[in-house]
Structure formats: C-alpha cells, structure tokens
Image (tube, rainbow, N blue to C red):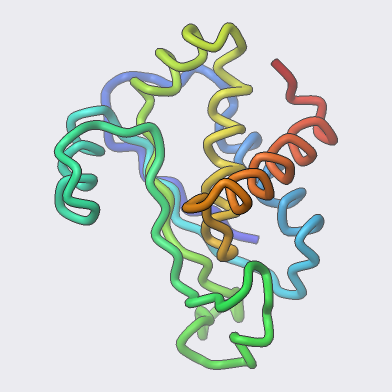
Length: 164
C-alpha cells in the first residue's frame, strides 16, 4: 500500500498523520475485502485551498473538511468486479490499484475536534476513513447510504481503538 502525502499548508498537523492514514486505510481495505495493493494520494491543506477546490469541482464556494476524488467508477460499493484487471486502474510500475485522491483541511481537523469534543487524531482518522469509503464507492446521498457509511466508519475506528 502506498499513501502519497502532499503537505501544502504552513499550519502543522501535530499528530502522526502518516501512521494514522496507513492504519485506517489498511483496516478499511481489510474490512472491505479489497484483493489488491492500493495507492492513494492524500493532500493536507487549509480552508482557503480546499474552498477553491470545492468551488471548482462541487460548485460550493465554501471550505469543507474533506474531499474525495475516486478513480474507479464502482457500480456497487466495494464491488471489485468492475475493475476486472483493467490497466487504467493500476499503476503499471507498482501494480497497485489507484483508488483516488483525498484532500483534508487541517483547519477543519482542529476546529471539528474541538467542536465534537474529541482528539485531533480521532478527527483526522474519521475524515480519512470517510474518504476511503468514498474511494471504494460508498456515498451518503440517501439516509440509507448515510447509515451504511456511518456504521462502517464507526466499526473501523472502534476496531482500531480510535474513539471519541
């Protein structure tokens, strides 16, 4: 598994975010029975930059906590049959499945951790778990979909001992 991290803000995320990202991604992939080694790009940024990207791609001119850009058009969440060994979904040098890109705002990690009364580690891990599920085809456009995602996020974080 490769998580390529690009840190593009001066505000420091003073937690072991590399290890947390690997731990969370690995467990989500295990729970979702992913049969491939994967690659994910993670951009750690600030509210201003995530606002620009949110405006460009979602037409919402406001900062958000996390954005996910899946590479694979899953028809059903974590249904890997859509991949069918298609070269365009793999890094040809490493044979890793290219799941997509994640962007997390450090500013929102800090403010939401305070707002929800839990640790910075828990907030970062929650946002990354949420994004990993999006990269695997999960969404929360309906109450039913939201309930599925929330249950999966909670299980993954509980299993890892990353609690509120």
